[in-house]
Image 1: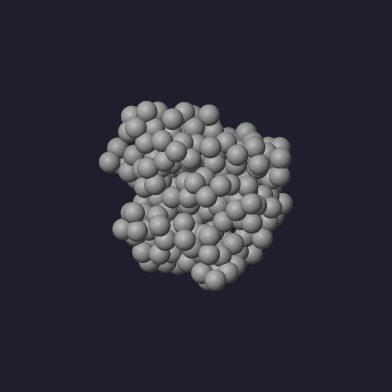
Image 2 (image 1 turned 135 degrees about the vertical axis):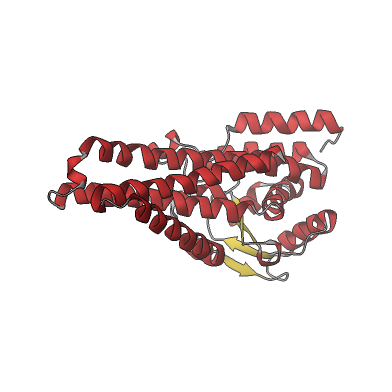
Length: 291
């Protein structure tokens, strides 16, 4: 409950930040603070609707993930089916991502529209126990609707950055106007708003990862299998980061797939791997589950 309330609070802060930018822009450029805030609040609602219905299709397309049947990926279907029976969840669709980078993600707005995607490299690298741990982690995301929350958070964070860029271009090329009379305030908005949005998005993502690790490990009653898988994935993604895709979607993967890209390493979407593994070992000690 505490984790859920924390996520809701962070998410509301993100929407509030987007609305606040509208308030500032409306006031500085049209002398109408309330209208600016309302317009941006409506935009936030529209963006949320788009994310709700289309985010899963967009992310699958961007990574060229292909939906596969039982005959095409019997190993994946068997493991996911076992997890679904243990957790009393409907069977999601299964997709394979054509890359040697070992990773996985889940997408979909609810349990009945979920897709669990695994890379070719993931299936090559992990044993059945370890792969089941990774898939259980993704099914925990599906169960908790984490993917919907994180997709919407990423969309709003991106919109905040876009709004800040509009202010910047208007200052640079729009000539003098009401907004140009407050250059310091506009500069503060341009710098702090995108950074604050990013930090809130990261907080939401990290919070959900810890929870999915715990729930996924409890689903299969083998926390150490997931811990071993995370160790392998951490090393595998450092050696062979994914070569295509949008870094804004990195929070959807079980480990960050863009490790090899300089500036991105300053703002990680996932908790430190050592802490995730330590928590899984602690869970094994508390429950007596091994494997």
